[in-house]
Image (cartoon, rainbow, N blue to C red; front, top):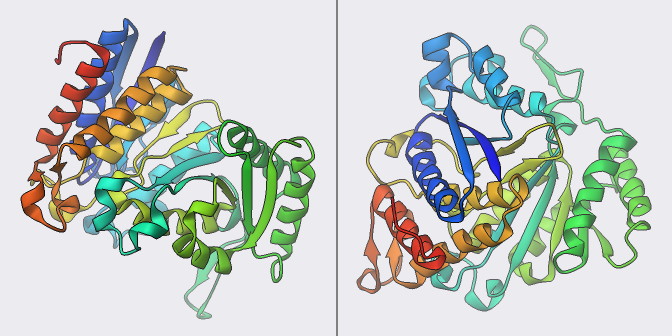
Length: 365
């Protein structure tokens, strides 16, 4: 396997967590005899400061020439006063659109050792393992027209989908469900929104192509409650863009920290990978960032862009073993602190590498 990976670490804690994830990927590649070529470019706030734009042309060209792109995080208070289309987040939206990935995969899973971090009761979340499949290129975030008319005191956005956009993301959800629990829950607001009525009709039609997968529909407001009361009832959750953004962030309470959750955006010319947490500028450079979400995102790189399932599982297993051994970063250090050891960002990365090395019987770099 040869994999050309572009790393755009971005802002805040992005470079810190991306560095740990890349170190794990290098270890796995060396141990497995695979060739991993890594290039680094700027995106987000740091690119605004250096290049005058959140997505420099050379970054975009490098991304399109890569097999996969790994993003750390973008944004920060420093750039919040800029117009929306010139902020760091605009660079990420532009990159997503250019790469063409339309299906965002966001796992949310319960980890026994982190149950104390969740506000939900252990018996509610135990065994929960959900995969959100969020449509990423349509809906309110991209629909036109959109405007804030400060003169009239009005603003408007457009939620828009076509049959084809729904079909392609729905098929990915059903294909992934075939490899998991064979159940898809499609989330919409079909009792109010015409665009959701289209969504429900198209998903129902796509379901006929997958007779081995059960389909159910849920309204987004009731789904927000059900995720917190019975998360074990769900396998693959299929959503449009806005609903998926909100529900997948909400589901972080199942795991106990946003810092634990990875994501992958697939379906386009180049897959894009990023932990779902933000740039957390208030803790940047202090060694407090949790790199586990980024490291688990690296596992998704191996699974979806390199086809290395065993190696991806090794990373995921290593993360769980490190937690079982009592190691934590600051965001995970809750409950009886005498039961575990709090590590810095780099120390946690080292623990994961050592564990991956043991699993793969390879020396640590």
